[in-house]
Length: 98
Image (cartoon, rainbow, N blue to C red; front, side, top):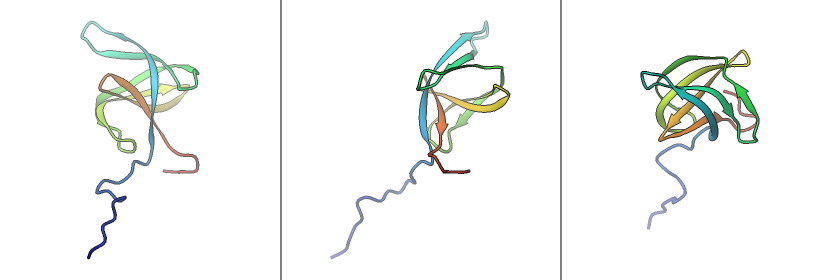
């Protein structure tokens, strides 16, 4: 008789969770979606100073593939993702330093 651990998985657990965002955006004449402001889970809002890069990308820590937006918000670079029509940021548990 062999023992099988039913709790283990072949895929590792994500290091971060998805924090879904409200995003104010406009669509330019070429059809590109440009975010201008984000609304965090707790209702706080931040203006996006600048969109630095938009490209296909993978949320490596929380999982998911779609568009990765590299933004400057309050002088800091941040990534947000657009996957299946929903916006999110990767949020790390307290105490986890990467």
